[in-house]
Each structure stands twice: as structure tokens, then as C-alpha cells.
Image (cartoon, rainbow, N blue to C red; front, side, top):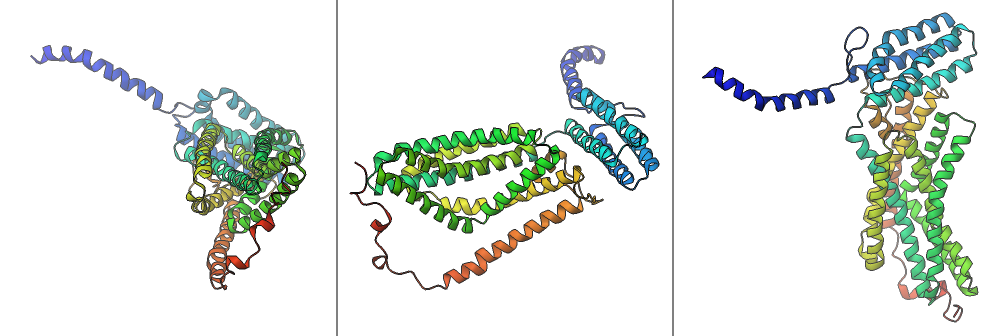
Length: 438
């Protein structure tokens, strides 16, 4: 009875066993390196040891200890990177060969009495190869794609919303001036600014690639400038005052253009109104893409979702006007923009460390995030990155306390504004119907 049952079960179990074997083959990490099996997670831990060895090698070179530097470089390769080679060779054979060659080149430079600058340049390249190796052995996971997609969404949506609000204000001003027939030139200028902003992104990319500086230094410079822009944008109360002045300037340009009937001037008003936002956006996306290696698809997803949401909101603004909670969104975006600028700053400091422009003091014992998540958050456990990010965070906290606490209470204690009838009439701020071109 039992013997008759077993043969009937085997055909049913065979597909399940084959499926389990296939899943194991696909999901199990590559094994078998010299000296035993090495999983991908173990290989990544070995890459951390390789980084420490590289840092120690450079430190020995700087102090003129060529013998010790050579011994450290050799040990870092034989004791650690060799354990990574077979798992890495399965997924990136060319990268594995490049890294092996670079290790050998560094040892040759040390024994050949090369200058510290030459050895440093080779080590900077090796650091880049080690980072690329870790990316090949690491899954992107869920956290890093979510963060970069959210950052991308926030940047395009926030900057695009500013442009939409400017367009709404300028078109409303034209309507109040009884010059609605001049809407088309303004819209054409704004459309040209959007196209120019896209072109500017690629122009900046080409210019940065041709500058005679290391990639790490250029990435750091781009991230620092983007951090400054985000720092300014984050304090939206101050930015709103500047935006008011900017809008008044644009209105004066519209008034002048309408007065003389200049279509070209109105096109330029529309262009300048949007291009400033577009230039900021292209700059921030430069930083996002620079530190988004392996995550560009998610950045594009966030961009697409942001543009789709912006289209819906723009339609709502022109149809519903003040009914949309614009102020609520801008207030909520402040915290996320601050977090994005802190991430950019952390990545900038890390790039300068890898280029050996500033020191690198590892914080041993601190948790280390997977490389894709580290890129997205700008979290690299070194004393320099942590202190710099902490300083920027404290500035944000202090600024928020002042803007929303002390300054907010001061404003609430001010006497109420004059009644509307005592203010200058609105007609004083716009061209009279007689001055508008017919």
C-alpha cells in the first residue's frame, strides 16, 4: 500500500522541487571564492576592509613610508579584495579586471617612487571602482528608490508650482489691466523658458564633464551650490518676501510692455519669470543625478509623477484659484527640502573626502547603510560628514525657532493694518485702460 502510494506522489512533487531549486539558484548569492564560500553580504563587508586599507595606504604614502604603504596595499588586495573577486566577477567581470589592474598600478607606483600626487590620483580612481563594486553586489532595496523618487517629485513639483503661481499672477494682472489679448506672448515666453531649462540641464552636464577637475570635486561643487539654493528656498517666509519683490518687478515689466504694445517684451517677461525657477531646478537635478548612480530610473519616475501632479494642480489653480491649499503645501515642503539639502551636503563632503581634498575620519562602530541608501540620504559615517550635516540641521532648527517662534510672536503683536479705504487705490498699481494698447 505504501509502496504503491510513493510512485504516485513523485510526479506531483517534481514540479515543486524544480521550482524550489530554480528559486534557490536565482536568489542564493554567488559563492566559492578562494578560501571558501563568500556571500554578497560578506563580500560587501570585505569591501569596507578594502576601503580602510586604501585609506591607510594613502596615509603611509603621505608620511613618506613607502615600504609600509606597499605592504598595506598588498595586504588590502590579497586579504580582502581577493575574497570579493569571484562574487564580483559573476556580475561585473570588466569591473573586476579594472579593479585588479588598479591595485597592481598603485603597488607599482609606490615601488617606482612615484609622486604623492600620482599615487593619490590612482587611489581616488580605485575608491570609485570599489564603490561601483559595492553597487554591483547590492540590491537597490525599497528605501533608496523611495527616497530619491520623493526628492525628485518634491523638486519639480515645488519649483513648478512657483512658476504656475507666477503665471497665474501675471495673467491676472493682464486681465485687470484690460489687456487679456496679450496673454499669448507671456505664455509663449514661459513655454520657451521651460524648454530652455531642459536644455540647460544637459548643457550643465556637458560643461561639468569638460572642466579640468576630478569628477568627485565637480560633484561636490554642484551639490554645495544646490544645497545653498535649497537652503534659501527652505526659509520660505524670507523667500516669499523676495518672491513678492520679484513679482512686483515682473508686473512693472508687464506694465511697460503693455504701455508700448511690445509683444517681444511680453515674451521676455514670461521667459524671465519661469527661467529662474527652471535654472534652479536643473541645478538641483544635477546634484540628484550625480549622487543617484544606479537610481536614475527612480529619479525619472519621481520627475514624471511630479509633472503629472503639477498638471493637475495647475488646472485646479486656474479653475479654483485660492481654494487650493497652496500655503499648506509650501509649509509642508519646507521640512522635506531641508532634509534634501542635508543629504546633498553629506554627499558633497563625502565626494571631497574621496578626492582627498578634506580629511576622512571614520566613525568605527557606527551603523553603515547600504550604498544606495547612503547615496539617497547622504549618510556616510565619518566625523566630517556627520558634523557638517549636524551643523546645517542646527541652523535649520534655529532658523525655524526664530521664524515661526520669536518672529511670529513679534508680528502678531504689531498694530492692525489700516482699513482698505485708507490705502492707495489698486488702480495706482496697474496701467489705466487708456494706456493699454488696443
